[in-house]
Image (cartoon, rainbow, N blue to C red; front, side, top):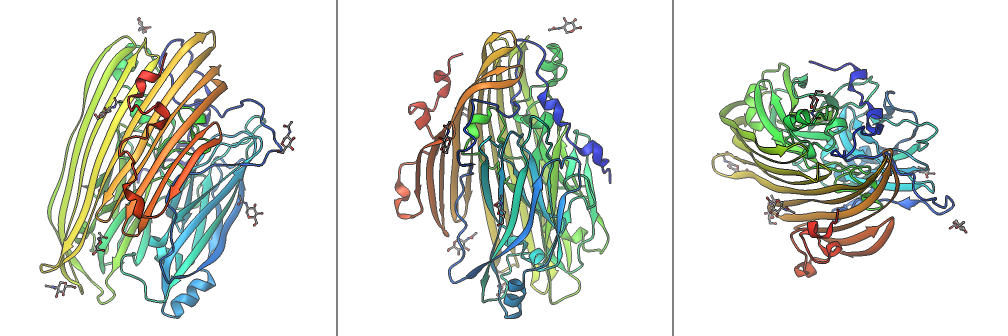
Length: 593
Ligand SMILES: *[C@@H]1O[C@H](CO)[C@@H](O)[C@H](O)[C@H]1NC(C)=O
Ligand SMILES: *[C@@H]1O[C@H](CO)[C@@H](O)[C@H](O)[C@H]1NC(C)=O
Ligand SMILES: *[C@@H]1O[C@H](CO)[C@@H](O)[C@H](O)[C@H]1NC(C)=O
Ligand SMILES: *[C@@H]1O[C@H](CO)[C@@H](O)[C@H](O)[C@H]1NC(C)=O
Ligand SMILES: *[C@@H]1O[C@H](CO)[C@@H](O)[C@H](O)[C@H]1NC(C)=O
Ligand SMILES: *[C@@H]1O[C@H](CO)[C@@H](O)[C@H](O)[C@H]1NC(C)=O
């Protein structure tokens, strides 16, 4: 295993602070935290939030039984061991299980506050090495901020039932300028059913992450396209189903990978320290030599990204709780049931420093046999691209990148459940257009990732499982610099991004439109404004949730919520919300540079 030394894994944070030397060149999409107009420090703290549907306990369940797992302050924690606490299953959980009951719902609540000035930091929460939550912190204000995230962790019921260790890594640096210390409470809320555990949750969860002790998060750090990180694991020989849940976040030179131009453009214009490698990234997941699946990640924008004022107090989609990606590897079990260790590995196509990747291997065990058997029947992981149509002259140019991939594997597993044939498939397509104009000071990126993945299994007479999820991740980013005088310039930013997701019994449209302007001096934001409009619409067999919310400079303009399924015909555009832009979806017409 090519494990990096802990120090090389750490992101060189200060690089982000350096102003770009040249004048009239493309700008990066990150600025230090804002030291804007005086804020009355006696005002109550500002509450930040990510729009999401509430987690509803199943009907008839008892609870919650709440347990504080960890409470800590993250000051100078960068390059330090994670904060850790022993985990013991709460007494209420043992009592419920002894009475023949089970966990109906488990919710992990992250609650944090901070005061002063600080960067947005990435953090991870692990239980016994398995990652449960990855998020980005909100950037504080002098009067203080608070935010909380509730994350459904029911699928980790097996881990929650065993003693272990909770670890939280949040690498923060405190100095005279960046004074913000993050105070965090991590609480587990359990709800119980009086019936035995349902079969949809794994019996065993093996972490595919780095083990403690560490001076970093337990994630692997992938620093280049050649960097492959792996862990060897043996699966129990009575496994009959296996799903790999992958966590991904991107930082440093790849924080805005979807805006990176090709290297030819960088070389031709002598932008030597500008991040390149083009705009396509793909996480490749292998078991031994086989590509078992891929992740084409959602473009999470952290709270300090593009224009930090866009994300206050409504944070970017997925930023407080990053999406994860499931890859069903049941078709490959035949190769893994030999009791030996096998390598689970991750690489990122075109990666620049740094990607944090790890995974949890969810395993279902046959309680009626010591040994299951299996075999791979067919397998295909065809990929096409990325191909780039590139055209530029000095700093102006256009780059269109396209790519697609199709993964499909079918295999059987014989257990006390019979001989079950499982097919897992993924279909991806990607298109990115990146246009630089006005001598490189205006950049417009328009990207769409379209990802379908599904699994079905049959025992020959009955379809035992059939699930498909189709996700579309649209992204539009306009960034324009103007009025450059000495070491000062203005920047207008427009961002639209979202997750549109369809499953057999549910559909989600979750889109944001944000725009803002900033005056920047020596790479510090000296004035600015930002607004955000989000429409979230979920319709599912388990209920509905609708929210239409808009903010400008920390103030909520309007906030409409509806959780009845009756008004589902309410007029919600399946496209981007457009209220901010006078009803027009073509916002470019409204941006004067
Ligand atoms: C600051 O806020 C507090 C609490 O809202 C208020 O009592 C006080 O008058 C404010 N001070 C100024 C200078 O606005
Ligand atoms: C953490 O819990 C303590 C004790 O209940 C409370 O005083 C504190 O405000 C909490 N902090 C956060 C960030 O929720
Ligand atoms: C880039 O640098 C090389 C070598 O210093 C120089 O010859 C060339 O003119 C420069 N190109 C631009 C576009 O500045
Ligand atoms: C972005 O690309 C999509 C798909 O190619 C296209 O439908 C849409 O009009 C583009 N949006 C803008 C603002 O260019
Ligand atoms: C397939 O599974 C169904 C439902 O569990 C069962 O009724 C049927 O007998 C099974 N068929 C075979 C061939 O095992
Ligand atoms: C969808 O709902 C139907 C009817 O409630 C149910 O039979 C089916 O199992 C559900 N499918 C999934 C994938 O949850």
